[in-house]
Length: 322
Image (cartoon, rainbow, N blue to C red; front, side, top):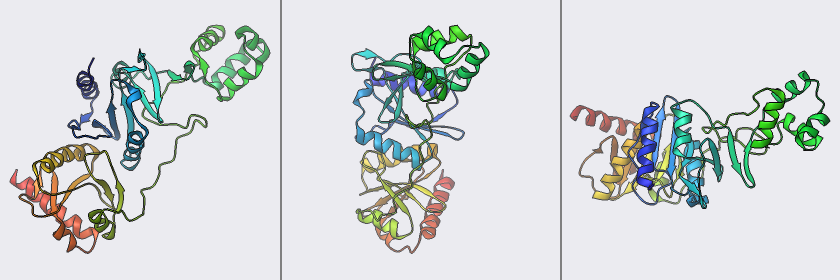
C-alpha cells in the first residue's frame, strides 16, 4: 500500500461519515495532509505509511495548529517499525494518536471506538475502575482473592480500581470472564489526554510576542496575535478579537496562486479567512476565497478593523463576480 492509496482511503472514510475534506496539501514541507470538518469536529490529518516517520517538529506544529483552531491532530498510517498497525489499536507518537484506516473507519463510520493502546512492552487496555470495584464487591471477592486468581499483586488490583494503571489484554479478558462484566474503557481519539494524569491538556494561548517577519510584524502592530508556522501552506495564523486569518506572505507568482488556492480550501474547512500579503503588485484581488493585499496597502491601515473591512469588500466583490 502506498501513501497515495492511503490518502484516498482516508478521504473516502471521512466523506462517508459526513466530513467536509479540504484539498490535499501537496506543498513541502507539510505538517498535515488534510483538514476535515463535521459540525464542530475539526481534524488535521497527517498521513504516513510508516508512522515512525513523524518527527517532533512536525508533531509540535500539528498540535499548535489544532489548539489554535480548536481542532484535533490525528496521524493515520499502515505500519510501525517492521509490523503493520493492528485494527482497533491506538498508537501514540509525540502525544498524537496514530491509527490505521480500518480503525478510522470503525470510529467515524461505525461509531465503534478503539479499546486498545500500544505502549512499550505490548498492548494495553484502560480499565473502568469503578465498574471493577463494584463487580468485585458484588461477588464478595477480596482484593487478595482476585489478585491470586490473576497471579498479580493485591496492589495491582487496587491500582486498576483507582484507574491508575492500564492492564494487558489477557488480564482484562480474565477479569471480565471472572466477574462477568465489561471493563474496557473506549479511547476517544479526538481528544489528547495526559497519559499519567488522564486529564485533558489545557489549550495554550497564542504567543503575544512580535514576530521577526516584517509583514507579520505589521499585522501584529495592527492588533493581531500571530502564530508563525514553518510547515503549513500558510505563513502564520493571525487572530484578533473577531477574525482568524490563515496568512500567506509572498511575491505574486504561479507558486503563490497555487498556495492561495490551497489556503482557500483549508479556510473553508477551518471556518477562518484566508489572506495573502503580496510584496509588490497584485494582478488580481482574490484567488478563490483567498484575498490578496499588497504590502503597501497594508502599510496604510491603522487597525485590524480596517483590514477586516478591506477583506470583506474584496470577498464580497469576488462573490458578486462569480
